[in-house]
Image (tube, rainbow, N blue to C red):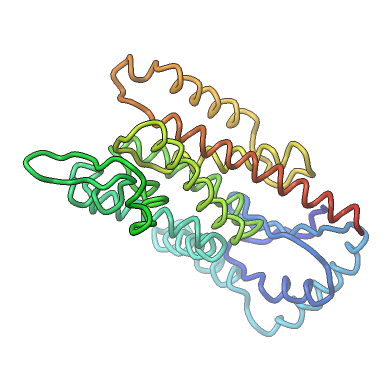
Length: 295
C-alpha cells in the first residue's frame, strides 16, 4: 500500500472514497492521532488516483470545506478549543462508531450496576444466573443458555471496580479503532467470537461471577499480531504493547495478583479470547492466500 494523501480529522472523505471505488481503486482510510490517512492498495494507480482526487476536490471548490471554516474560528480562546475538540469528536464517531458504542454501553452498564455491587443489575448480564434470596448464589450448568443465549456474551459489559473498567476500556478504544478503520463488520465479528470464547472458557473452568472486556481485548491483540506478522502490516501495533500484555497475562496466570491481594483474575477468559483471535487471524490469512493463488 502507498500513502495517497493526509487530511485533517474533521474532513469528510466520502466523495473521494466513493470516486475511488467507482474507478476500481482499492484503498483504506486510517485515523492516526489527529489526522486521516488515505492509503492506496496498488501503487501503480497512484497517478490516476491523485488526478481523480484533485478532480473531486475541485468539483467541491464552490463549497468552503469544514476544516477551513474551523481554522478561521479556532484561536487561543476557549471557544476555539471547544470547536476543535467537537470537530475531532464528530470525526472520531463517524470513523469508529462501533468502538465508541461498545465503550458507551459498557460505561452505562457500569453505572447501572454500580460497578458490579448492585447484584440485581448484575444478575441480568452474568454468565450464570444469579439467585438473590437470603443470600446470593449462582446456578451451575449450561442448560439456561438455551432460554437466555445473551449470557454467552453479556458478561463482557460487566466491570467490577473503576480500575478494572478504565484499564479495559482504554485498551478497547486503542485496539478496537485499529480494526474498525479496516472493517466495521470484522470488528463486530471479532467482538462476538472472542467474547463467546472467553466467557465459555472461563465458565468451563469454574462457576463464578466474572465479567469484563479483557477476554475480547486479548482476542483483538492476538488477531492483530498474527495479521501483521504473516501479512503486509496494516495495524502497526507497537511491539512493546504486545510484550506488555503478554507479560500481564503470564503474571495473572502465575497467581501473583491474587497473592498480593488484588483479587482473582479471569485467566481462562484471557486465554480463551487470545486463542480465538489467533485462530481467526490464521484462518483469515489462509483465506487471503488461497484467493491470491487463484488469481
